[in-house]
Amino acid sequence: MSIRDNASQMATALANKEISAVELTNQHYQQIEAVDKDVHAFLYLDKEGAISQATEIDKKRAAGEKLSPLAGVPLALKDVLTQKGVPTTCGSKILEGWRPPYDSTVVSKLKSAGVIILGKTNMDEFAMGSSTENSAFGPTHNPWDLSRIPGGSGGGSAAALAAFEAPLSIGTDTGGSIRQPAAVTGTVGVKPTYGGVSRYGLVAFSSSLDQAGPCARTVLDTALLHQVIAGFDPKDSTSINHAVPDVVAAAKKLEVKGMKIGIVKQLSGSGYQKGVENKFNEAIAELVKLGAEIVEVSCPNFEYALAAYYLIAPSECSSNLARFDSIRFGLRVGDDGSKGAEEVMNLTRQAGFGREVKRRIILGTYALSSGYYDAYYGSAQKVRTLIKRDFEA
Image (cartoon, rainbow, N blue to C red):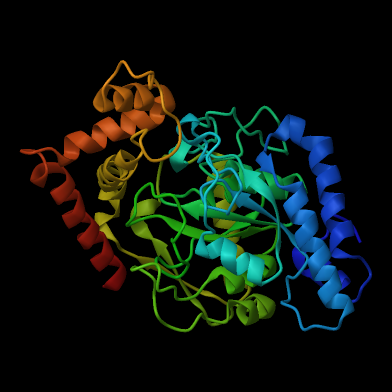
């Protein structure tokens, strides 16, 4: 049993009592201690809580209780999801030291399944960035080459997998924050269908785009984790109320013969590094070799997607981050009795938010302002509808 094994192999070893959950958890903490001073994937380690969890799993297994397939397998959690009593910063100084009084639905489901939460991973502040260089607590490095980025915003969750600090992790994806870090760290990440995984307890960046999802080192492990966290949640008004597809069976089958796969015409052409383009073409050739049918799909409105995203996401960010007002929780600056509430709020937001977050708040506030709403945010939402129709055509 090695920490380089994948999660499904670890689950089998645990079920066969070849290793205990406590032993496996300690092995991963030893790896974190050995490499994370260079990688900086984690912001907080909940060693006491994790060992307590693992001890409970070992007791249940010894008593012959029926357990979830991933019971006892360790996991790294992106620091944008609340975990009761555990610091949740979203990579921002404005939330430094805040300990939520409740679990997010994702965390509740992980705990119910017996998955061991090792700690919270680094991220671009409030998930705004693509490199994990915008964290208030320093950048995360790519384990394959420490001079390079691990992607973002969920670079910590991806780096933890690539550095063998955890076999599973949870990320969130608004505009690529699960998928892009997976691509640059050689791991697997999936952004589930919007509403397929509950957003209750996920600190919002752009509510109509945010989605939590599974990350791992193999497709099967990602599917196993998806099966744990997916499903309807009455606490989330955007949650989809239907059965979770059996993605585990699909991952085990690994069959693409007869599958029709679309290649978007508007996303081909110039602008890609030669190595990236070559790998893309190699992947297409491999799919054809395995029996898939490749079809070129025209989505004429895709060229406007990035512009629409950079109006919709900052606008929703401007609204969502208004809640960080220094009054209810988090950082408070200038509260010496000599200043009014508005000045304390201004000082707190000035000191607590980083440059990229401020930039997006300003952009979003402008797009939502009177006289510009229809021209910017309203128009972006119309483009969003056109892009959706491209998918449905």
